[in-house]
Image (cartoon, rainbow, N blue to C red; front, top):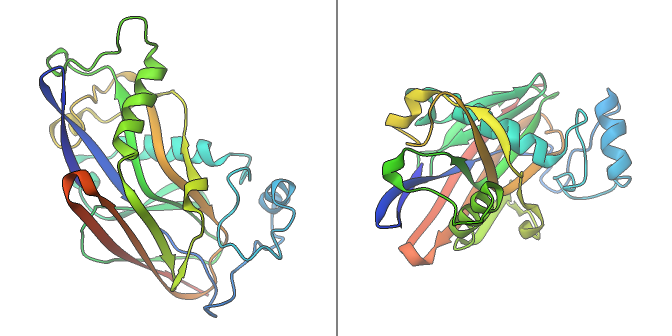
Amino acid sequence: MKTLNFQKNGTAICLVLMLLFASCQTEEPNHVSVVEKDSIVTAEAELTDPTARINPSAVFPVTAHLFGKSTADWAEIFGKTVISLDCESVNANGLLPLADKVVAPFGSLGSAPAEYTISKDTYVFLSPLFMFNDYPCPAEFEWEPAEGQSIEDFLEQTAKGIIDPFESVTVIIDGREIESIEKYRQNTGVFIFTGNPELAQCFDPCVTGSPQQGLMDGYFMMLKKLGPGKHTIVVKGELPAEDFQYEDTIIINVSK
């Protein structure tokens, strides 16, 4: 996990940037898995991606819906799942369950390669870079919107200011780079969450344990089903202003 300190009204506040990793493809490097006709998930997704069976992309378009939820909906669920973890879990690599058949590998920038095993019926939600922004914060952080500024605009603009400076964000799945990754940049809009208050000591000083307003900004993708076998994902990026570069690897094993 890369933690950066920024000055807000003369007071340092810790804003946490997180990585989520995932993989998709079949055993053959040049053949991408497609969604099988095994549930309503396929029908809903294909309404928004009618080329699902011939589209060479490993990723659903941002307009697709799986289990009736948009990419932004899944980003919100992911954020709420992360912010409910305890200190031990949030600072370790892990595979987060978002729904019965959807998981989200979660890890830290610059960590050792992580390896997971999932079933062939599991969908994987991927974010190569994101920020969870929240309000309110303790008074000493002076984390407040400007006079006349809405909380939603405040959260959007401050999150954007953190994510925008990152450059060359890249996801490579089994040697094949996901093209036009900028298409997957989104924010969720404001939602209500209740986080684990323990995280105020180790992860996000703004988490209170009571209902708060949150927003996710970053790169979010729902991947098509993985084929059985071993898959290697490389995620890279850089933050020139901090002279920071990262390259992380995750391995996903899909059972038959």
